[in-house]
Image 1 (cartoon, rainbow, N blue to C red):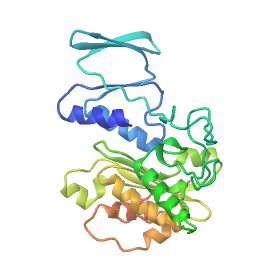
Image 2 (cartoon, rainbow, N blue to C red):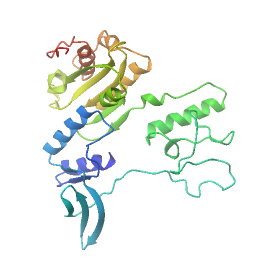
Image 3 (cartoon, rainbow, N blue to C red):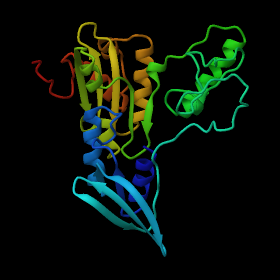
Length: 288
């Protein structure tokens, strides 16, 4: 994600950017509909995205870098002016703790903690990138607050199922909750509502109409299970979805709320209405 963010910035500044992705799917953590839209959009912006390209080495030659990789066609190489390596992160816990501290680490170097960030030693807590879960600043910050609250004797806890993820590209990409493919794999029947920014008056006024809002709800209870956005202010819209999900809202609940006009938030409103075939400003899909 970080590599895509940096690459998209350089592309918008006029550089010719090639993205080498080892996996066969683009942004696999995101909802498939969002991933497909993102791939189409970034390709249209000029990014050369190569999937299934596993980098095997790099070599500096003068002021250039030759990168070797393998794909379905075999061994390949490309020469670049600059190379950004963004292959993920790992916890920096080597020599962090004394051998007799009693704090347990797992095989990947993460400090073992429970749901309240308590380690294997009473009174010792760990938060953020050195423990399990998403390596995100907002997750670490809230873990720290939770730990302080619990030290003070309060019954604080975190809902790890509702931590928003954001990719700061243009268009922005964000989501909270589960993806449609995950829910289907779990055997959960869902209803889905989408609303394109092309039908948003505010987006049209800002000349930023790419992307859409997607809401996934349980087919039996109508409870919102996921909110996925690619487009303008995606992170802000997803946060609205996270608030609704935290309080167990249904798609109908969101649909019955009054959203100010003209705003990008109306796209979230319309997507919620579309879940049950009640969108106002787009044609509703017929249920199969």
